[in-house]
Amino acid sequence: RTTISQIFADQDHFGGRTVTVCGWARTIRDMKTFGFIELNDGSCFKNLQIVFEDGVVENFKEIAKQNVGASFVVTGTVVLTPGAKQPLEVKAAAIEVEGPSAPEYPLQKKRHSVEYLRTIAHLRPRTNLFSAAFRVRSVAAHAIHCFFQDQGFVYVHTPIITASDCEGAGEMFRVTTLDMENPPRGEGGAVDYSQDFFGKSANLTVSGQLNAESFAMAFGNVYTFGPTFRAEKSNTTRHAAEFWMIEPEMAFCDLQGDMDVAEAMIKYIINTVMEKCPDEMAFFNSFVDKGLVERLSHVASSDFARVSYTEAVELLKNSGHKFEYPVDWGCDLQTEHERFLTEEVFRKPVFVTDYPKEIKAFYMRLNDDGRTVAAADCLVPGIGEIIGGSQREERLDLLEGRIRELGMDPEDYWWYLDLRRYGGTKHAGFGLGFERMVMYLTGVSNIRDVLPHPRTVGSADF
Ligand code: 4AD
Ligand code: MG
Image (cartoon, rainbow, N blue to C red; front, side, top):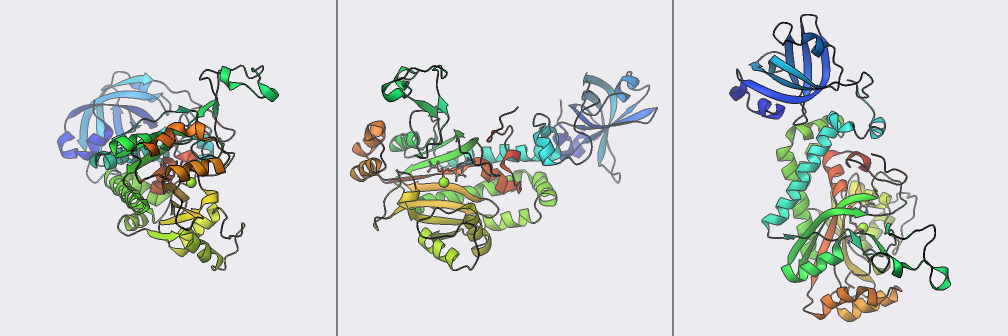
């Protein structure tokens, strides 16, 4: 069995040879004594033109009456057709109708809107847009593993079910085996989770970071790459309830080193995808985001900007731009602020560092000014935040103090605090939102269209 991409990639080799290809019909034309099938097998964009002739294939009538979407196994000779619309075609000797398709097949040969395609997410991988998006997604995932593995980072599988709330934002999906219509109740009528499966309340992870830190304190450099869950009621084009995150964690590393790794990683992903997916990138460049390839090439070959939160707030305040949410020191940056910084002020990716401690998570290292923490978010044009990272608080007393200050219970973090008791080191890490990275690579503007089966507020179909 040969893939269509192999045939197109090595035409001189395949010309004149007999091949067997398997795929789905994008179009079928019956010209009475012969016919054409445009076959796609998902290995590339290109459709393979199959010519079938009455008398040569024994089941001509059966083939000719098939509908778009049907699957076929075709055996035939590759004929090079230089000068024709397509450089080659296959003259079929035998065609097996593997699976017929019903006439109401929803993907007809016309341009469907992405909104419509979301309602048929089980079939949309068969369209050019999604075929390209998910091939890029696959290549980008592999590139990320290569980037870290080549530098000796150890890949850690952090748990999906956890008892902690890493980001402290309370946006967790609870995991329970209790009968929630009639749960055991403790003091004051609150649900008694001590009777639950784990003997305590548990949830789906919002980040693997805390667990990754314990492995960084043994292996030095580690990374995670796994699903992450957030019950954020944000119905936006960049928030999903289930998304994938890459979280490197590096011992003996400070915030500068953290940003250096993040910047090198993004450039590596861009370069790899441009090299391995030229056809897909050309497609996105033509049909989704004109100028995409040139922009990404530029990003891969120039330095990212770095600016402190305090400077960023000044830039925004002095910009004269009227924001929906006014900016002032202490406020969390909204998407409109992030996008203004990266699209209007710097016109390239920018790291914003040293945020006020009040708007960041408990584990971030307190700066000498006593009011900011060693955080670094990476913002990119078109999306806003793509990476959130920080140097971690390695000083036991300060970390414990911050946990108490936030009304959290140090008992719940006993093992995390232990990491500071036994050979704790300076360390740092970050989280890259994988879907946002794929959006950035493809120019696709809605996170629902880079997730194979998106889960967002009010939607968990398919
Ligand atoms: O900034 P966040 O919340 O950082 C963390 O979770 C840290 N524990 C990471 C670390 O230091 N190890 O999330 C990291 C990134 C964001 O920058 C964003 O790209 C993505 O995860 N992200 C989401 N992507 C899609 N849908 C959501 N609801 C997301 N929430 C965060
Ligand atoms: Mg963040």
